[in-house]
Image (tube, rainbow, N blue to C red; front, top):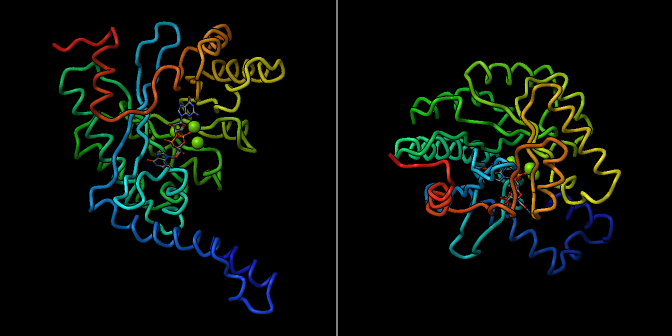
Length: 288
Ligand code: C2E
Ligand code: MG
Ligand code: MG
Ligand code: MG
């Protein structure tokens, strides 16, 4: 980051500006450029949502989808959300981008329902700054009102790390819940307070982080997964495994009682058109 660069410059330098080597300069340039371009991404129509199916691990049918943001820049090409979301958080742009995601996802889901597909729940990712913003609850209500999507078909994914203040978060989450939307904990198990979060917050779904799913042959890891699944089920939560890439993982998860999953084994996140094709293939969906 720029702060880090200045810090390094001071640590290293008699002269702060001498340390600005080419590589560092390039990193900072890219970052500054991305930040300024990102503020125009919505109006320039460069953002798009991709959709990844959530599937029933027993029947392999599509039971829902996660909306994932994609940014195609005319000069830089495809930029990963892993790179631009943190920058959007810093500049505050995430609030406008988050509202765009909310609205677009609700609109798309409503559109699929109107086309005659069985109604599914769509989830979107919510980041810290967006969640903390005083207008967030309003933005959710507004997106539902404007698109006519019924709240039960919207799920908000939050991570443990965005919950800085549990009592404040609890209030916001309770209000969201009273609107009727679903709430899930994303990347579950990677934070420092997973159990605390589960006990204190009104959550409907646990999404077990991919890092646990990656290594299902390790007995220690398998014990942990089994415990997470049991814990979720005992708390009457829906449990979904993220990042499933192989059939043996599906078998193992089913053996442990986990009935939902998501991952490249079923489908990568795909464009609206391609997702519609997946819906048409999925045996339970019939257009009237
Ligand atoms: P996430 O919400 O945990 O999403 C899962 C990420 O893992 C996605 O990466 C997805 O494409 C990828 N993935 C899914 N299945 C597999 C698999 O089987 N193997 C592997 N290797 N990867 C898999 P993506 O789309 O690059 O998004 C990365 C992260 O960026 C997301 O993690 C989420 O935290 C954030 N993000 C994406 N879209 C949004 C958004 O609209 N708003 C906010 N605030 N954050 C977003
Ligand atoms: Mg997610
Ligand atoms: Mg995740
Ligand atoms: Mg993640």
